[in-house]
Image (cartoon, rainbow, N blue to C red; front, side):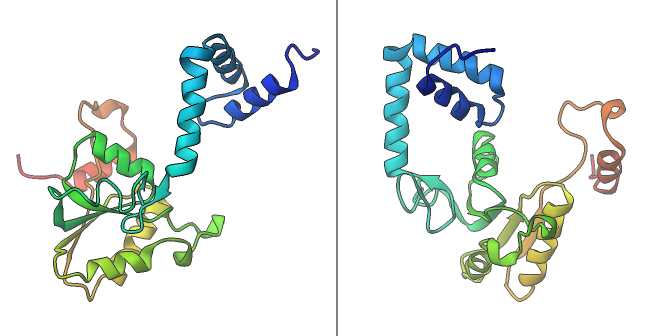
Length: 200
């Protein structure tokens, strides 16, 4: 099939197709929608992206992404300095914030340990976390890492490093999700839920 649009539009489609959740067809639809709504959508979007490019930075304290440094979360006086929630990625931090799950501080590792992908301890912000854990104000480190092999390997590695810090190290509960039906859950989730059962 021949080209139906000029190279500039094809470039837009190709770039949009790189976004998570957008394949080539979805990218074409998105590009067409942006072009049709140039004034109302495309121009403000381009402007917002330029501002983000110029102003977004990584928080020197926790690793969050924001337009200020330290970030909005780190400068919030209502946060509990005694708790640090450790996450692998900024997306996890944002998910916990959407759920209003904690009033603690955060620490973004940047990834999880993954020898197969060549990600070792030196690639993560583990040293900075250990330093923060030795702060007298900190009493608990919550390891909010994925329930995957890499996530749990990272959690065990960090726990070993925090042995001499005067902090309680906890992790997220694993098991039956809220609204979940037992018949639809996998065996690993069911066995984890049974092991971590609590008083009713």
